[in-house]
Length: 614
Image (cartoon, rainbow, N blue to C red; front, side, top):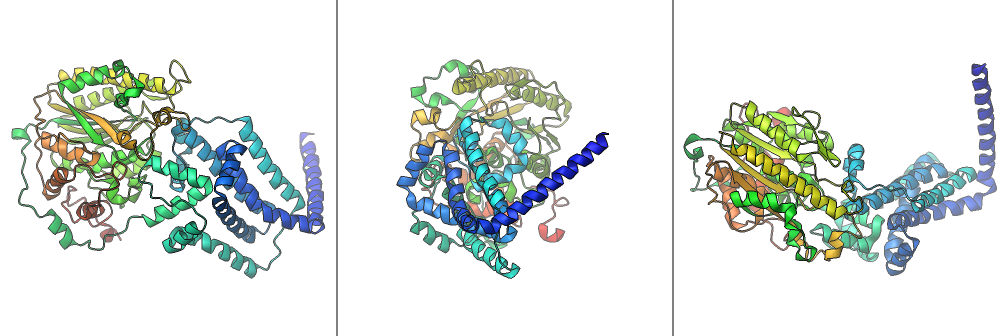
């Protein structure tokens, strides 16, 4: 009985679909002029809908349209080229509209949620994280509003009308191929041919101002809005891609590293201390802003630890997101500026064993471990970092101690407990790098879900209390242990009405946002006299730690120490007026993607160059 009902239903549906398609086929010719009009106006329609959706209010879009009409004309032209390219490929108007409309509306929705979450605007390179969308949704404030639903319904209604009227492109295959190529060519040229894109952007008054920090980038968004911003930043990203330096050669690297000052440390007579690097997610000291009147109670335990050890200020290579920038600088001792400031520098690494700082410690007889209390697939850490020389890699599912959460993520105290466990199990000194997760956005699980900043401060206080307990336990440890702790960046806070907006932070006065207070602490009489008094960039931290423990130096380490004295701050975000250092840039290229001509911490038997692999 059920089977027969299903067969009858299937037959009925086939009949209805057949009749509908007959009607649609007639509509193609019956409404030929209307169909032509629909295909002409769709690129304009979907461009407007995407901009309205991300702006939230029609009034905001109208204001932008009246102030920047040439930019919207640019958007319409690009959208038309994309649409007619799709139309030439699929031939069916409604299908081209469905693909084009879906892409534009999704981009605008991602931008809406991204900016609302952390005050940063969407760029196309962010799409590289699409496969980690499940992880990303745990970070974001996602709110489906009636307004958002209405905008989607309007876009869907337009495409549904097109489906019913059934406009088509009536061309022979060869002409369709030529049309698709003709439409694709200028779009591709905008990205890959700087001379062409510069001229086009100038004609349509698209803002091409170099944005050396996140706040300047956000100001560029205000000038260009979503669609032109995405295209222009894609052009900029392609133009700034990493290429081999003109003078890169074995001879040039040897000349850079030549030094008569190479020192040979002996770990102060052979006593190798444990070295613990804690990069604390979104940890920052907001007392830097007097107008916020932040209570000292939130940082009391951190201040106590600083009084027992040493503290200073570092210059972070990022703000609000892209933790892997800071992580790269700490793990490699190299500046992201020398790589043209990619958001995800780990994606540039050659497929091989990498000369990270962990490799040095392994060569000195240390056991090495990496701890990150989050999924190993995010930023491809589990795959990429396996080539960094870590004996152990511990992600959220790998903890060997009881796991507790604070807010959304694993409690920092759980991470500290895991570090203690590793130290107790190791017969050799340990180098441990941990990137924590507790203080990552969203900050809506405190005593007041709407008090984002107050919740954040409570979580920082919780970290500091856990840190104090951790250091108290290390104090009783008989093994000499050096601890370094710093926040990877100031936290992501809601865009539009958050703390940074209230402070009036902009592209010209944002340098303080890149300054991070750090802690050095030891349970033995460590010599901090070699630590610079002035501010210096994150990537010098590994050499500072090596100096404190009196580790041996090779030519590369020696050279980086010399750079620390000569150019302590090398960061585009903090100071874009400083000129590039060709030597430092070349050394960075050599160790990240080049031939590893510079001194190599990877044991010879393990290192295989890409040329040999091929």
